[in-house]
Image (cartoon, rainbow, N blue to C red):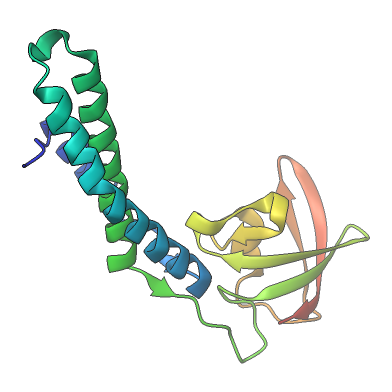
Amino acid sequence: MRVPTRKTEILAQSKKGPVDTYLTKDKIVRLQRELLELEKSRPEAIEELRRTQEMGDLSENAAYQEAKWELRKLNNRMQSIEQKLKFAIVIEKSTDGSVQIGSNVQLEMDGSKKSFEIVGEQEADPMRGRISFKSPIGRELMNHKAGDKFQIKIQERAMNIKIVHVN
């Protein structure tokens, strides 16, 4: 059974533009596992759609509408993961000592020490110390080496930053 694709869904996909494709090996493995799980659950969702379709009047069949929505959500998630994996660029650790995507950086920011991992936009989680290479701090850190000092303005506040260690 073919699930219909709406024009609005196609337009939304085409307007998204280029996707940040830098992913760690761990993230790629997690996405592959999630895709396998979704593929396993898809036949069940299709069967539920068929079962609810047989109940009669589709315009007033809430169970059918719900099953159709669940299948569409599942298909969209699978498509999203496939797209990410198709264009994924694996983040490799830098060996020249400069800050690159995939580097672990220890900073001294206005006297306090903080550690960050520089990742792609999809994996950024500042609360866990993972910042995007496109974030204000991430952009400034790129290509610097241990010992470099500079100043960055974040939300009208100037911060003095010193790179203590690059891994």
